[in-house]
Length: 144
Image 1 (cartoon, rainbow, N blue to C red):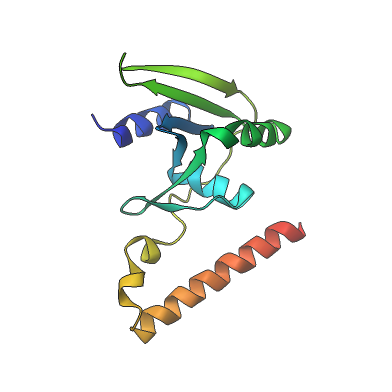
Image 2: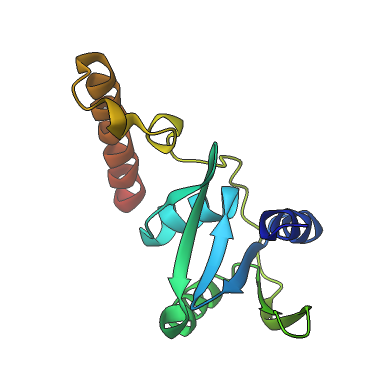
């Protein structure tokens, strides 16, 4: 079983809660959880696997984001995987509200490597459109 399989199982078990798992010096969230955290806190999404985003929170900043999630009364669970013992530990948990984000990625074209085609005027136009839509979504969220 891979890390991504473990994460998918934990997300299914904790559906609606934000699931973070420590991997190295980062706490990782993927899919809908990553997109939700990106929208709420402007955390950078990168490609986890085809069609699925991930965000990473440095361990030094975890308490900052935990405090923000708790102030929003959001449900979350934070796991630490101990590689030596091959065991998962729950570090933090809050049984607050569940998020209803369904989107698993922000923009598949960028995830698939649209940057490879920088000279393609058509793909550049699509990329600009998506970036503008994302900026408008951000503005609408801030205006509310």
